[in-house]
Length: 409
Ligand SMILES: *[C@@H]1O[C@H](CO)[C@@H](O)[C@H](O)[C@H]1NC(C)=O
Ligand SMILES: *[C@@H]1O[C@H](CO)[C@@H](O)[C@H](O)[C@H]1NC(C)=O
Ligand SMILES: *[C@@H]1O[C@H](CO)[C@@H](O)[C@H](O)[C@H]1NC(C)=O
Ligand SMILES: *[C@@H]1O[C@H](CO)[C@@H](O)[C@H](O)[C@H]1NC(C)=O
Ligand SMILES: *[C@@H]1O[C@H](CO)[C@@H](O)[C@H](O)[C@H]1NC(C)=O
Image (cartoon, rainbow, N blue to C red; front, side, top):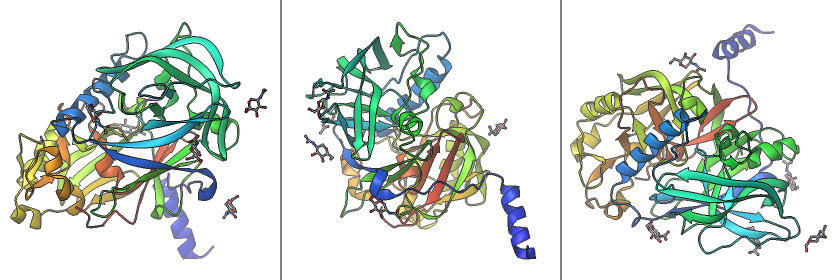
């Protein structure tokens, strides 16, 4: 072993979790995601994200006996959602499902698309209900064939079929790809049943080589609304640059119930948030920071809150001096460039803002740090970094993409 290779092995050992991800054959196991905007659905972007943050915290604390208080804001009432077309039955009927890493039940039957039963439909004997606060669904649990792509078919996936639902009128249900323990308490009478997600089943069937998903979201640009992609079984090497660095799922509750990690945040040389637990979440639009960290960012940038949009606003002079906002895990650093910290300016008026203004995508989580869920890395982060959700090794991977440093906003 040469000295250089010895040193690099030692460096890898020291970094600990820089493991090679499974790189998958993209033509086999990727599912395109359509990005959908609904600007009429809310009048304050921030309030919506804050409500989801509160609900995610209370939902995790509610586990283990106490009734689940659910997500207090329907995830479909968002400005941005990513939708997957998923087939159910034999022959399959296609349903448009919201992709959610913050919940784990997959269900269909809302909107104008009723469940089409075929010879593959088998009732499980359980009823199912998940409360998302203002939104919910309840119905009957079935086993049925779920087709994600012609290569990704799950013959006996446990899914909910809604007989009633609220606040999901514009989609046909949810593809829940969070940790499967979030399904405990959703079935009745089998309250203690853990419902495996589509990812768990694909792995159990060995259809995919690892219990991992890779998610790519593309930022809005004036020429493209920005679609996305989920890769099952590993990472799609055509969608990220450099290497994927993994960090373990945090053991701090309640972030540990979700795709939670430890992370610190710096704005230029200033520490905004010391190493603490939070989550990576596809159901949150902005990047939310605990109030003390948010205040640190606000004073470091000189931004002022804009009451109409709920976002921070800065002047062109302040924008010219904006520094990188750097997210550091135990395995790597991820810098949001000044441009990546802006709400897309061409969408200002759609969220109630002023055309010429400059709004920031960092929002106040609404609670102080030290509560076990001190940040949420939402779309604003995930549209700049590829993310890998690894159940087998209980870790989250992050990598740069061709959009990390892009000037799109
Ligand atoms: C990926 O799968 C496709 C379809 O089976 C195949 O044609 C292609 O050769 C595979 N590529 C690699 C790199 O294995
Ligand atoms: C947007 O959201 C509103 C309110 O939830 C809903 O009434 C409307 O149908 C939605 N539009 C689309 C295109 O999803
Ligand atoms: C369902 O979706 C798949 C994949 O997008 C497509 O190939 C198929 O034609 C669709 N089926 C129907 C009945 O629309
Ligand atoms: C179920 O229906 C499909 C499609 O019509 C057919 O190909 C399959 O043979 C049927 N299976 C059984 C067990 O009847
Ligand atoms: C995360 O941080 C907490 C303290 O904030 C610490 O106890 C824990 O060991 C860290 N690492 C993991 C993987 O949770």
